Image (cartoon, helix red, strand yellow):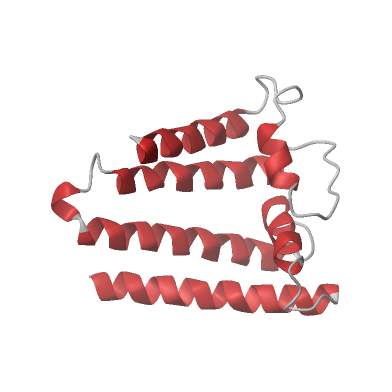
Length: 151
């Protein structure tokens, strides 16, 4: 089973790498530029550029994270739940909800193309209010992951 999850993780990583390469060619940015990954993650979270390619990239990102978490579960099966590694799942849920918020719930967001738009959206408490449940679920997931890792 661990080899199946490893194969899934490597396949998802390969698909994400291909999507990153295609993104860099479409936007005219160098793959070796340190700012290209930040632009890529802005596009991944907010669905910029080609919607289809960014959906594929987001799905491969989530599959990669979930398969790595599954491999960790298989390695620590008897002592997994309650260990700091088990709380990584809350962080994955936080990433998922942040993607959902940025794509479907974020309104009037100014993307400065610096790669920090998702983090600004996550930490902006003034504009979030109670009207963005995905954002609050994302924050809860990140906090749960952080508290579990520290514990």
